[in-house]
Length: 210
Length: 210
Image (cartoon, rainbow over all chains, first blue to last red; front, side):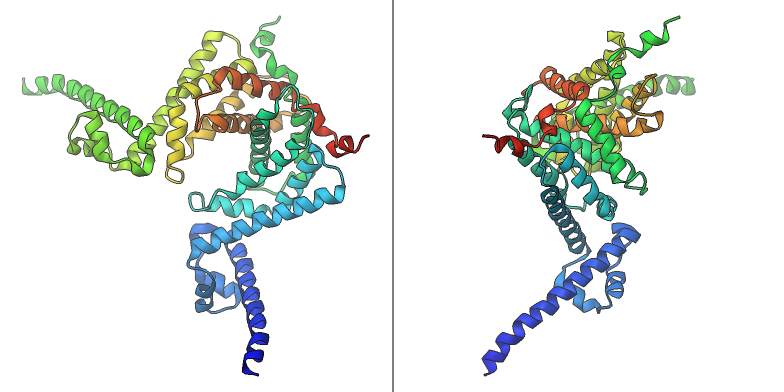
């Protein structure tokens, strides 16, 4: 009888525990987004989450651990939602992949900003790794990469990832506009057509024309 | 008389001082390239430079300071040599700029590797900043950026910089081949023509063809 009631209780305890953890993570995300890594305090996180300070230490060792957990879970959420958006579109082409990534990163741009406040502390594996993995998987499905060879998939994935990364940080680190659709259009233009043709001429020759 | 001889002596002392400093920096660059930031010791640096330990502290506070000085001066040397290579070519077009950057970064690829061993310690301002500045200056000279506007120069510069950055790190962090000419060709192809056209189709549609 005692054993049975314990078996019933344990999942309930685990659920409550998971709820408290999620609650702490949501509060931490809010506090890090406002204060940045260095100025955020564990006390402010627990006050925002409306739990005692002791409860924090049941779930996380320190500020650095909860910071990296916020980032890891944020990135994982982005990855999942990008996957869902692509599946929903039903087309697996570069514009669909790129638009989905821009949409979801924009929707969770607080993660970009939080990451930036903790440079050197933020575990870096997640960021470039996630997009590299997506683009590699995408490129492996493409049958004709000419004039590139299959061996060059890592380079192509890295170049695509580099373009996305710089586009994210170009505005969204500090402002909300322009939003994801406009940025996706501009970046997709470059991906499809390259940079403006005039960049490949010598502008000094033009300026010396009469 | 005494004052006069001091005035003569001072520049000599300054010269010797500068020579010792350059000597220490060259030794540090070698030691950091071999051991990485974390395993390098000040003793190994002074032994390689053939100076006493006390001499080190006349020039630098600690390992972090000499590490960041190696990086800053290395980047400055790359920037200068890129400028010289472009001036020597006499043409200021994207292919010339891109090739010059690849040549010089490849020639000093130990700087990339050293930087990477000290992530979180390495002052970051130099890296992306240097290329962003070069590309911004270049783009400001181009009269026709269509379909982009002048307001989009920061985005275009960031995208170009992102492509270069990823290309550097794709191989040169760990291996010496392929060298700068081949990488420049591949990256310039993408810059000029965009990514392979088939990436913009839905590969799943192709695979479902009979």
